[in-house]
Image (tube, one colour):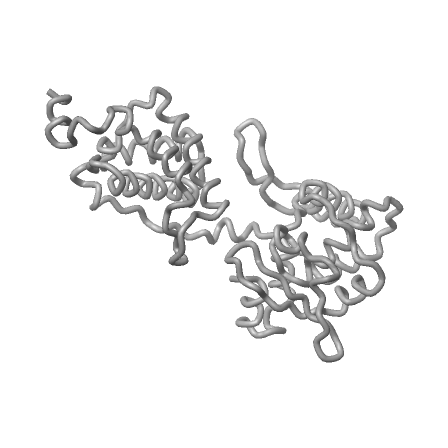
Length: 301
C-alpha cells in the first residue's frame, strides 16, 4: 500500500533512495555551486558547505540505517530528532536549532528539485530563535596591558618572534585569519602622511580600507612577518602568551576529542588564545574610540 501511494503521488520516475533525507543533504553539498545564496548571487560559501557536511555527519549518527525520507519529517519526527540533539549529543540550544533549521532547508531544496513532497504539517513547523548571549559571554579578548606583556616577552625562537608580529597586527586590523594572513607589504598604500591597508575580505568578497595604526606601522617599517599557516600560528601564539604570563584563570571553550566538540572548561587564559582573538580584541579596544560604523566597515560586520 505505501508503495502504491508513492507511485500515485510521486510517480515512478523517482528512485526510492532519492526520497531519503541523507541523499538530499549529499545532493545539496555536491551542487552547492548552483544554489542561490543570501547575497542574491549563486554558490554557497565554504563555511556554509562545511555546515552541511557537519549536518550530514551528525544526521547519519541519528539515522544509522538511512531509513527516513524527506516526507517523513513531520512535527513528531522533528521533536524526536530535537530530543536526540539535546539529550544524546548534548548540543547547546543554538547548535541544535541550527541543525534543525538546516534540515528544513534541505527538505525545501529536495522539494524544489524533485517530485518529493514534504509532510502535510511541514510548513507549520517553526523553531524558535535562541539567544547566543551565553555563548557570547565566552568571547575572550586581550587587554591593552596584556598586549604590552606580549610585546615585552623575551622570545628567542624566530618562529615565535614572527608569530608575535602577526598577533599584534591581528589585534589592530580586525580581520579574520583567512584575510589577514594574505596581507603583504604590497597591501600597504600611502594615505596622506600615513598608510592604509587595502585588502579584499574573503567573507563577503569586499575590498576594505584599514587604517594603519601605530603598532602596525612600526612592524611594517621594522620588518614585516613572513607567512605561516593558521594551524602553526595558533600553536605559536599560545606559546607566546604562556611565556608572556597571560595566565589568569578564566572559563572558555576547548575542543574535547572524546565528544568531538568544544566544551566549557576553566584554565589559564593562554590556552584559549587563537588567531580570532585579534579580531575580537580590535573591536573591543576601539569600541567608543572609533565610530561603530567605522569598526563595522573594517571588520566586515
